[in-house]
Structure formats: structure tokens, C-alpha cells
Image: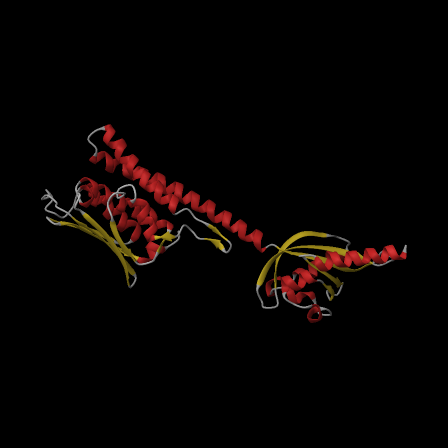
Length: 332
């Protein structure tokens, strides 16, 4: 029987030492009596550094009063299950933990101490935060889509001559926006959510692809990640420029050429869209003050704190987007 008891004790000791959780014993004066490998991994202290010291060395300053409450409940024989709190490691880093504390009794049944199991729940907290951010992003995007649809309807109606024209205009813009939103969907990462940031050149490629599959386009933009708030206005502007280029500009002519350049300038980001082609004289005097220009100006002004200008000549068209760098890269 004694051999069986010794074997069981060895098994229990091995289980405790091999546990990923911190398993600690303390007396009713809150002095640490035992310290397993899991406690060392979570909190960074080796056993000889903490045994004999108060367990409150693991408590942040604003959590020091928790221990008195624990001891009071333990003296009453109460078990504390899955209490979520914050502890600090040897380097002062704060760690969210789930704590279970059980009273320890002697042979006479008297409570003489407590066993404490602390589980690091950092991963669960991170997952919950990711979920919260994703839900917030979803609500934001849904609201944006309805707002954009409401704004586009009257603008497209002014341009459309028939119901079929209106449907075609709206369908094209929605497809472009859908492509942009798919590209900008937030991506889960080990260290958090990337908030929808995507490279500008990839966003340009997604919008240009349906229009330029047979026409080479020279794209030279500084490496920059576009924030989720900037995706929609940029998609609208690029879609409008592509549509006009296919109808009247560089993408409508075999010899036409399109180039796009973008660069940082202090706290601004300037994008230049240049079409080299033959363009007939315009009724608006070559300044581009029609529907498309109005829509682009409003999107850039209201959402990117910038300006949009187009200049037409017999040799082509030149558009300049002067944007706030902060608005362009902001995540939400």
C-alpha cells in the first residue's frame, strides 16, 4: 500500500510540475509555499525567488486588496472558481489570468492554506478583442455601403437617360466598390487585427483590372497601406477615372497610354493620373466640371481632406489627387 501511495504522489507531482497552468500553494498569511514549472513560465520567477515571499508580489498596485478578500473567503471554507483578474510577471508585464483557489485542510480538518491555479488567458482576451473589432468593422462597412448607395442614386439618375442606363451605372459602381471592400477586409493576425489596411498598388490593381486587361498601365506609387476609411472614396474616384478613360480617353484608343504615380509630400500624399491620347474639345472649357468631377471632388474633400482636379488638353487628360496622409492611412 505504501508503494502505491508513493507512486501516486510521484504521479501527482509530475502532473503538477508539467502543467501549463501556474499551481501554487500558500498559507493563510499569503506566503508562497510551492511553485511549479507553469508558474515559472507564466510569471518568469524561479521557485527560489518566490518561495517564502508574499503572493502579492504578483499583484499590480491596483489589485492588492484582492488578496484580503480571498483569505477571508478561504477561512470560511469557500472555493473561488474562475476568477478573472490581472497579475504581473517578473518584468512588470500585466497578464490576464483566470484563477481558481481552493482551501487546504490539515488532518484535523482545519483550513491551513490554499492551493491556487492560475491560467494565462491572454489568447482568449486577444480573440475577444479581435471579434469586437471585426463586428465594429462590419457595422461600419454596412453603414457606409447604405450611405454610398443613397448618395450614388441621385447622382447616377442625373447622368442616366433611361432606367437601363441607371441600372448599368449603379451596377458598375457597386462592382468596383465590392472589389475594393473585398480587398480591404480586415485580416486576423497573431498580434491583433490589421484593420483593413492594404497596399495602395494592390487596391489600384483591383479597380483597374476590369478596364485595362489589354492595355498596359504604368503604375509607380510609394509603398503605402490604405486605411479602411479611405478605400471607398478612392474606389469611387478610380472607378470614375477608369470609366471615362474607356469611353473617351486613353483606354478607348489603341495608341492611348495611362500612367499613375503617387508620392508622399510631408503630411500629404499626391496621386497623379495621366492619360496620353487625343481628346476632342469639351463643352465645359476643358476643366471637367460634370457629374464625375463633382462626385470625385466631394468624395476626396469630405472623406480624405483633399482636393481633386482634372485638366484636359488636346493631348490628353491629367488628374491630381492631393490627399491628407493621415486620412489615407487611418484604420477607422
